[in-house]
Structure formats: structure tokens, C-alpha cells
Length: 106
Length: 384
Image (tube, rainbow over all chains, first blue to last red; front, side, top):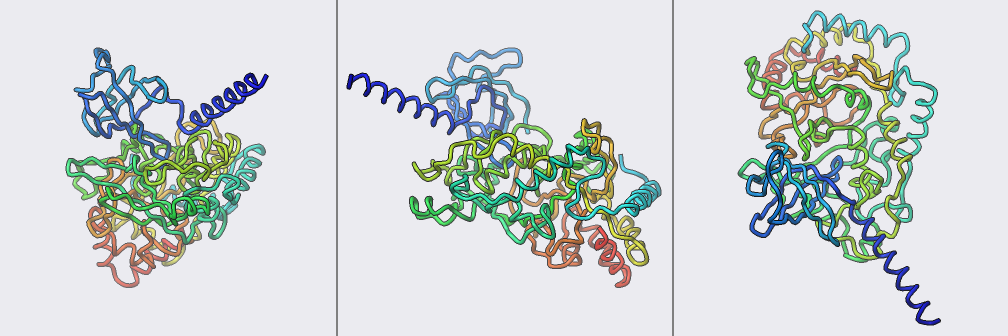
């Protein structure tokens, strides 16, 4: 009985932590913003986005297998200051890019 | 898109005449609202004036405890005596870093007791990456809903970045981080009024909301545990929408009667070139709100950024270089106590004389006027 109670308590705590974590970061599925920094070798892409003057730096991991073609581009086609639209998903706390489109230079 | 001077004067006369029937006072709503919209305006004003505490979500970093704390004179939506600190980094390659990873361009000047206890901070530290620091006064926000409703295509038509007409004025569009055309803020960085408001709740008061559900970081560092226990978002969508409606429906006050010297000043304002950037009127586009639908209104701005010279330069933002600022809307300027983006000018004469860059031509023509003519221009401005 004690084990069941402890397990239930842990479950509640874990779900609370997940909920708090979810509140601290918007659930991005798509981001449009300015490329702040990029490291094609390590697959790291930082994009500035936000609402009004509340700006946020969003870090994305870009898989080496990311498809390009059509409107989609690879990281090598990007430079700091470009405006990009990124479709993405979460893997744990990590935001993974699924598709990057270059909207234009600023 | 610019009106011929004669047409502009006729339109001004018509607008003033219509205003004479029922003058709009500072703090009034725009005319033509439905009863429901007027009710939302009143309820929105209550949210705008709500004072937040740490228990209701204030902070942990903040500049003010209420929208109405900084926009209060002579009524809610007016100006304030607070001065903000903004900072960004302008790089040699022309890129402007808004320091989003270091807490953003607005450097909050106050902190809740819990944050002070946790980190010993009285305010947000200035990021060491900053290359520029700018001061920003709290200006009146009358008529911003009308400015919001001007089509982007009009702004595009006003821009003349290469000065093709050789008038010395080369207004440029600024753009937000996602590429959309900006128009709000001293650098015309923010595209829409509702986004400006949603962002302002967070950066000014630390009040998260459905549009911006996360707090500002502490100079890029996370908020210590237990410092901001109020669940996010700290206001709901209805409170945000009501605030938007209050600001959107806040009317530009009617100009005072422009007789005698002021009437001559209006003519001189146009003749010496002030109206090349401070467009007397703008027109809204099609809008689902009838009171904002295809309305011509006094604006005295083109919503573009202009190079104002090195003496006024401070920070970059978006595409705007440190010396570029949005043409300040002059509606309600008679109610202001200090002028220019950082309040450095104590009088309208000083503000004009501090214009540089693209404004230097009009400034020089103003200085070349006779004392009586200069007084007339100032008399005109004091009717707006």
C-alpha cells in the first residue's frame, strides 16, 4: 500500500514538473525569425523570434539529414541575419528542425 | 500617395471643421464605436490601469507596476515621466543584435523583493555585449489604433530609401525579426499594436499572457526557483484583448483652433518641409471595425525611419541603424512636457533644432525664418 502511495506521489510530482517545464517554454512547432548564429558542422541554429519587444532566442538542432530542395534549404545556404521559417518538433527538451525555408534577407 | 498641398489644406479644414462639432478630448474613444465596443474600451481601461504586485504576477524584473503608471498624463493613455533604458549590439557587418539571448533590448530598471533576495539585483544588468544604450521616454499613445489600421502598402509607397525624388528625405521601412514591416516603437520595429501590447506586458511589468507565455530572462540567465511563483500566463486572453481594445479605440485628441499665428504656422510647417516626414494625415484601410474602416485622420507621421544624424544616434533595432528613428506622430504633442525619443529637448524649438540628418534641411529652414514665423510654427504645433 505504501509503495502504491509513493508511486502515485512520484507520478503527480513528475507530471507537475512536466507541466511547469511546458509553461516555461512555448510549444513551438513553427518559428519565423532572424538567424542569430549557426554552426553547420555541429547542426546548431539560433533564431531570434518573439512578440513585440519581448524577443526570444530559440536554439534548434538541425539533423545532417535535413532535406533541401524546393523552398527548403540546408544550413549551408544560410547566413547570420537571414530570415527563416523553421518547422520543428521537440525531442525531450531539444527542439529539432524538420524543414528550413529562407524567407529572405532582411 | 502624398496629397497635393492644396488638397491637404482642404482636408485639414474639413477634418478640423468636423472636429469643431464635437471635439475629442484626450482619453476619449474614437467616434463611431458600437455600444459593445465602448463598453470594452471602458473595461480595457480598467485593465490598463490595474496595478500588479508580485502576488499577481509582477516581475521578477519590471519597469512599472501598471500600463497606466507610465501612460497617465493627463489621462490614461497619455505620457509619463518614466525613462527606460534600451540596449542592443550593432555589428560591423550591419547586423543588429537585439540581445535576445541576454534578456532582450529592454533593460528593466526594477526587481521584485524575491529577486533582490535571490540574486542581489536591483535591476537588470546591462549586457556586456551591448554596443549602444538608448533612453526612451513614455509617450502618449492616443490614436495608435488608427496608425495600426494603415495598410502596409501605404508605408511601402511612402518609402524612398534611395531618395529618388532628390528632396533629401529617404525614409525607410523597418522590419521585425520575422521580416514583417514594422511601425510601432521609436524605431518602428513592431508590426502590430496587439503584439506591441502583449510584449509590453512582459517587458514592462513581467506579466506573462497567452501571446507571450514566458518571462524575460535575467540578463540571459533563468529565473531562480521560487522567485516568480505565479502560474503563467499571469493574465488571461480576455484581459489582454480588453487592453488591446482600450488602446486601439483611444482617439487622437482634436487639434485646437488654428487661427492667427497658428494658422500661418500650419502653412509654414508645410512650406519648410516638416510635412515631408510628418505627414499631416494618413488613411486606414478596410477594417472590420467600422470606426477604423477607411478613415482619414491626423497623424503627422509617415511611420518610416529616417536618419536623424549622429548627435541623436543611440541603438540599432531591426533594420534601423543607430541614427534612424521613426517619424514621431505629433498628434497630442501639445500635451507633452519633453520631446524627442529620450526627452532631451525641453521645448519644441529645441526639438526642431536638434533634428539632424534628413531633418537638417527643415531644421535649417526653420532657423532661417523670422522670429515671428518661428513663433507661428510653434503656435501651430501647440494646437496639435
